[in-house]
Image (cartoon, rainbow, N blue to C red; front, side, top):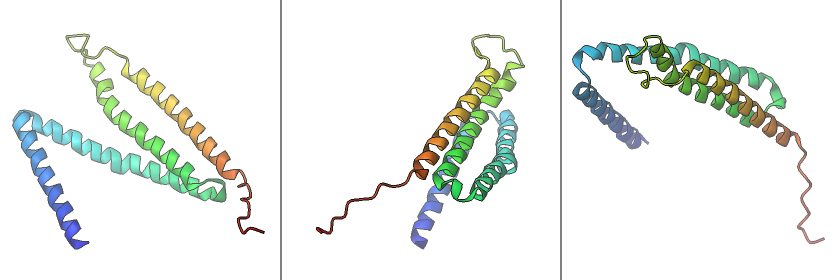
Length: 150
């Protein structure tokens, strides 16, 4: 197990080094602080907002007791994670809309409205899947035929 961990740490260090090389090779030095700020904001967003919300929802669903299965909890947490990732991609576009680019084809959509519609559809799909799994879990299992030959 220790050998596998060392290999994985080595791969991680190599990937970090490659990422740093690509960053400094393809981004102007004057833009590095902005990239660092974006990465720091993503870390804060994840650790201070998203992770506690997912944890609290999972804890609340577990307190429901036997009324919710682990699958329902996983579906709800998965929905939150997917929505958070899409929001992480969409929020910079929403902010960029306020700066009115010179070329109107750069940001052709209403990203705020699109994100809101996405969250509504995601909530409906997550709720439907959760209810479906919950109802399937509550159904009694049909008695299996006895194969003992009697």
